[in-house]
Length: 174
Image (tube, rainbow, N blue to C red):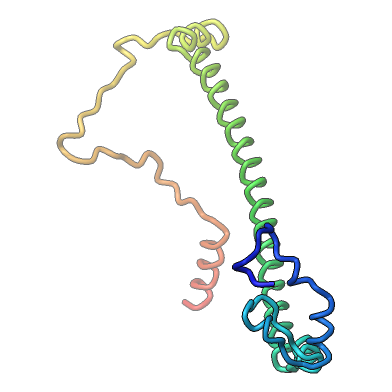
């Protein structure tokens, strides 16, 4: 039964039933087993105690509370990510609309620029509106180097409703 004097690949004596029964009945190891050191026996009472763990209510509560907190944080993160995705989708839609409107504006500007050339405006004024180009006698040049040349053409007093009411009150007290 020794490990040193064997010629087999496996030591089958470790699994021998007679020694196992002797060991469980006596509760002590046999001398041969002490030498091998392969099997450790545990009494039935101590193995039952080892299998049953004492349940600590504070530990159960703290683990449950930690689980609830982690779940709440995870749910909050998922909700914020969903809202962020919705906002990003709205931003992309609005950017697409903006690009479309900018392209449309550029088309309109090109159309307007092509129709509002100087020659087109001159031709339209002469043919449709009956206008003629101004001659030098119709042009009057004003020099502003000597100061303001603004003139009041009419000396009319433009009365509004408020000035009429103000005049009525001032006339009543004078």
